[in-house]
Figure 1: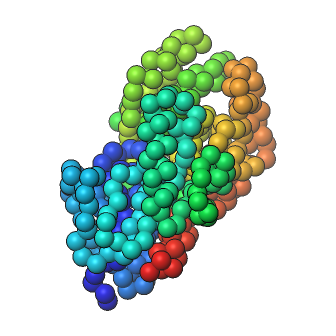
Figure 2: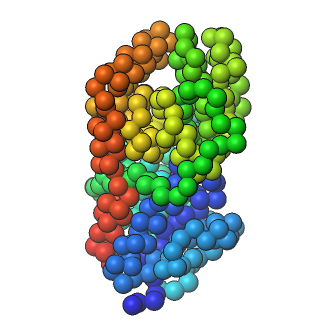
Figure 3: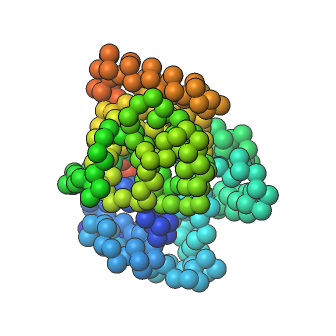
Length: 351
């Protein structure tokens, strides 16, 4: 076995747990490690010490510690050939590799239209595209956005969908287990996730709404909307949850709701579908691509009365047609093993 890794992934974004980028890096790198073992090769990750200390990866995955000054200067130790920047705005680019792969998750900054953010993001993504030898989008929607808004200088964009994490650990009830049926949603509590449109779904029923994820001041807007509908006592913003509790919520929810208006893929959606629960999504961005024809979609304007009707009709259809098997089948279309092999093919072509 060649003990000198030639491929290294930028996993700096794993410094923030309970985020989509953390999950992307964790699941993809874990799957790549299995491919590397089959190929009698090693793989490396570039990450801060806080990530390295957690020992999240198999022994055949080695580490390069990220230093504070590496955003200004990065010369990798060893004989690395391929650098995979796993985030479109990644700041770290080594000077001593022969090829670069860039994964683009989304162009959400185009739609925020905050001038300062827009200029910063556009400058960085243009720079990273110039450096990249191969460009990967995580959905057809993201690819379409890239081709519509960015000059690739003749470079092509490949689509490699994210996978569905097949959790095989313990599923543990949370300490504050819900006492009645609940609707569940998951994601960092930010305006782009659009959670504030959800409290209306509690009208004329006895359901709770539970939202898990890193909390921000946007929680106030969600609760303001809950107060408007008279359901404040049934809306629970519980903060981040560990994996064993998250799987319990996904498995046991009455329905999974995800009204995001800025999504490159939607990892929570495929994880929820893996349990065959009814799924209600936004029509915006990549979500129809991921949910296919087994999800129910809220109207584009999120009109509350329309959403209530869509929710009730979706639940009725789910019960009458026993859609659980179809929903699980849709989830199974997305595999981290498949994604890893498609990325590995790119690495080998560059090598």
